[in-house]
Image (cartoon, rainbow, N blue to C red; front, side, top):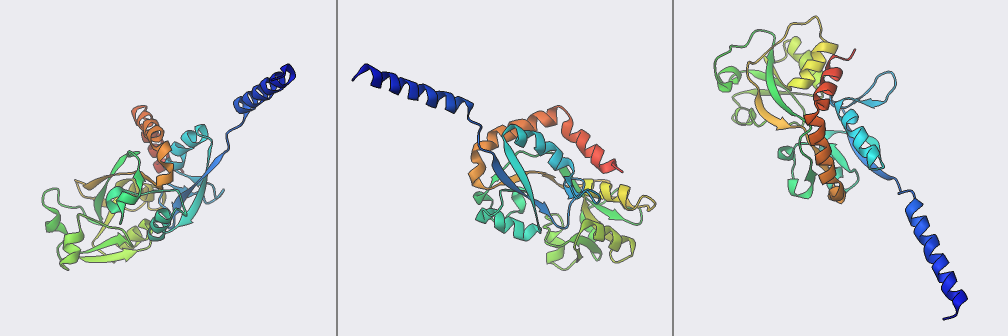
Amino acid sequence: MKLWKVKVLMLLTLLCSVTAVHAVPKQADLKFVLYYPQVPPYMYQDETTQKVVGLVPEVLQDFFQQQNIRVQYVADNRTRAELRLYQGDVDAILLAKEWTQHPEKLLFSEPLLEHQDFLFARQPIAAQGQLADWVKGKAICTRQYYIYDALSPFFKNNETARVDSSSELTQLKMLLNGRCDFAFMNEHVANWLMYHHFPDQQLYRSAEGFGPVGLTVAFHPRWESQLAAFNQYLREQRQQGTIAQWLKFYVTKS
């Protein structure tokens, strides 16, 4: 091969190498479902700015920026969102593995944090006793489409009446209006609602919670390559106390 051809090939190789080194990675888009009705303090739209805020966006923001991934929030209801995730129309949602129809078709992160459901009532709830002692023959305000493992046997046997509502806010309104004897609700969501919507109302909750569940992110399988790094990031955030700080901030944020 002639010398000038060798030099040209070497120059082209060098240029390609420099271009590869300095190329900016293409930004990826991730569609994350914002439940409607929304679920503060985890994830909701600020009434003034319409920006998606809450514990989850705060925790996710740094990780996805580091990975050059742009998060787009897509509003949808709980049932339709799960179907869209299976189809790959969206990329991620807040969803516990035990609540899904086909968990084998999804990837689940480690929990951001754990939460429990509690009974809430207008009158003090006896400190001693079993769940059956409290709920048999009673009406319980619940959220539409939600699965309540602790209460399912009582609903199935018609020993307890299930009174569905469109949101946790409506659950507490119905409880305060006497439409049900108890509301069964996530502790963090209930704390947010009582702080922001019912500061002058006295409500009581059961001494113990039921069915601790991890707040996890469910991903479409195409995001498998990101899962290990995401889990490591969540572990660091928990150990540093960052998630607990954001939870406290949003529960009491005025």
